Image 1 (cartoon, one colour):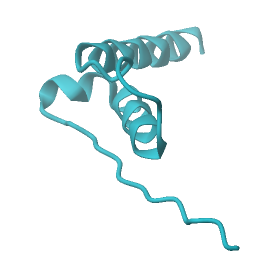
Image 2 (cartoon, rainbow, N blue to C red):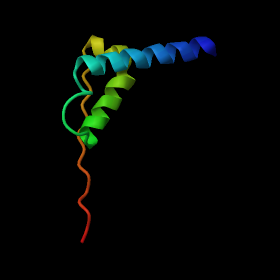
Image 3 (tube, rainbow, N blue to C red):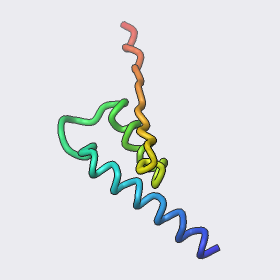
Length: 65
């Protein structure tokens, strides 16, 4: 169990590193698409270095009046 936890942690840390290299943590305020793209990049982990470039597009519904 400890080996599996360590592998998951390393996987996610590599994803955080990839998101940082793509400057996803800097810039304007977060929105749905930006937060989703950061999360997808982190979950993709080392796959980012094999050409995976996850992007998330989302539109939130406008509140009804």
